[in-house]
Length: 345
Image (cartoon, rainbow, N blue to C red; front, side, top):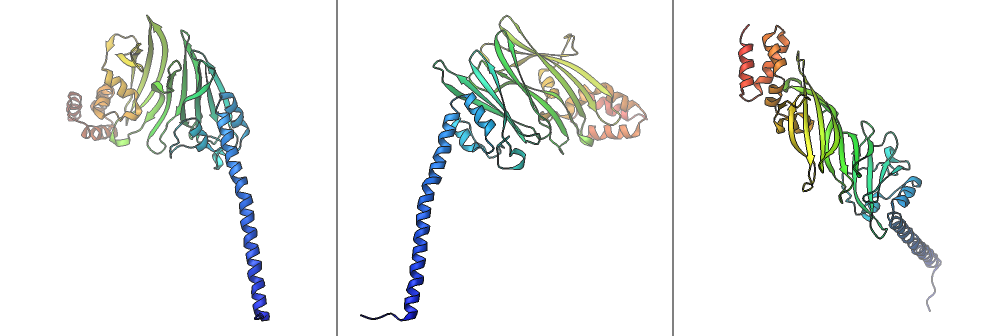
């Protein structure tokens, strides 16, 4: 038998120690892996349990500083999109605290909406709707996420003839884009789906600088019922904005929802609140929608009385602005009238 030298013996000791250390590491990994797997299973089991009722989910969100929102939304059968941002119990500073949860309850059918919010600096707010079936089981029927970057959102439950309606008011302003807007969404809670059946701008403004006529709008919607038809009466106030422009308008529209429809549909529109002078339905919807990019031709038509004063007046800056606006407008009778007025000193 060949004896090992001292150097060879030392080398074997090193190799043995490394093997022992590696073996210990493998043993540690083997011990740790089941723990990590068990923790993952525990988290998934916990989520599966808390989504079984709105009350259980509310307690879980209130007590958790960190929520696996992707797993939670999957358990609720709510799609997780890349652009979605957690309102609370998240992984970034604006959402690093436990959630504030309010349960709003309604009947016909039995249901609960969880209004989920975070800190004052939270980016979003979340509304999750649960509906209870005849067997007493709860299921999530949908969710709505709104922005809270610029202002806090608000919600309200109202009823009409026993039917529950839910409204969410939120800020959709485009900072830097020349538009500020507060929007109100209406949800019919008697329906299966949790989706808005009517949306309108409560207040807002759009600045077009030298490229068009701006406007500031305010509106209010009132819900009534007549002969089985639900009616939303919308009053709209518009102030048209521009250099030297001082023109306002009042308009009114009637939206109805019949039994065979899926949302409110505009039926009539009027100049003024007295309902004496009909106006174009598309024009009303265009004037009331700041996101619709209303064309200059419509704005010139409705701001015409104020534009006439500019064209016939002495304000050089206002006239220069008006010429710029008209150069970007298609040929219409209103444009020709204003150009004629501008041609006279």
